[in-house]
Length: 354
Picture 1 (cartoon, one colour):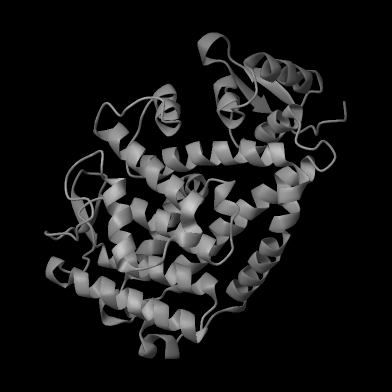
Picture 2 (picture 1 turned 180 degrees about the vertical axis):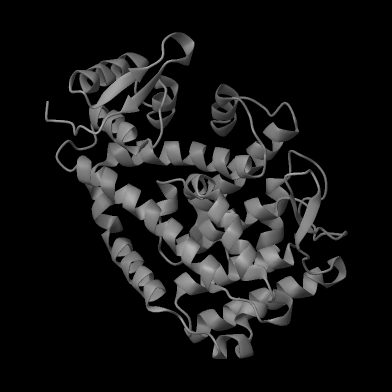
C-alpha cells in the first residue's frame, strides 16, 4: 500500500540512527545460536514466561484482562474460557502457539492473515476470519469524556483489494531485496493498521504478524522475551509513533520513520534483556537461583512474590523465599509494607557473590 509505493520509497531517506539499529539487530541475530547452547533450562523457563507475558500484555493493551490464576490456567490450557475476555485471551494463546511452533511452514499471504484472525476470534464468536463490513474509526477519549477521531482507515468495500495489494507489494519488495527486512516489517505493520482490515482484533493481529515476520527473517527473540510486554510498558510511545506515522497516509505523504524507529527499539530492548539474562547465567548454567535473581533484576518497580513466581514458573515458592531472603541479607532488596500487600523494592546496592 502507501508505504511500499514506488513514489513514496523514491523519496525515503533512512537516517543513520536507524541504520545503526539495524546493524545492532543483525549482530544480536548472529548470537542467538550461542545463547541456545548456553543454558537450556533457562531457555525453557524464558519460553514459558514469554508465552504468558505476551498473551497477557497484548490483550491488556486492548483492555482485555483476566485474574492471574485464570490467565495462567488459560494459557496452559487447563481450563476453558468462561467469558468474552477469557475467550479472546484463549484465541491469542492459540495463534501465538501456532506461530511459535509452525512459523517455518506459514506462508505470508492475505489468506493466512484471515486464517489467523479466524483462530484469534474462534472462542469469542463474531466475524473472525472475515474482512470488516463496517467502518472502524480509530478514536481516543479526551479528558472531558469526548471522543476524537485519530485516524480513519480504508473503507470496508476497499479492504479486500487493499490487503491484496499490500501483500503483493510486500512480496515484490522481498524478492527484489531493495529494503532490509527490518524495514519491510514495520512498513507492513503500519500499512496493516492504517487499513485496519477487521472489525475487531487489529492491534493483536498486528503484533502477532510482527512476530511471524521476525521469525521468517531469523529474529527469534520473541520466543523468549515477550515483545508485547515491552510494548505495553511503552504504550504511550507505541500509540504516539503510530499516530505520527499515520498522518497523511492516505495521500502517501506520511512519515514512516517515527513508527519504524520505535519498532526497532522494541526489538533491541528485547534482545538486550535476552542477552543480559544469559550473561548472568553463563557460569551457573541457568540454575533456579539465577532465574530468581535475574527475575528480580528485571523488575523496574516494586514487586511481589507472586510476580516472581510468574516469572519463574518452575521454581517453588519456598525456593523463591529463600533467595529473596539472601538478597535481603545482601541489602540488594528491602521489604515494603506487610501482610497481603507486602512488596519488595530493589536498592542501589549490587549483589555480591554467594
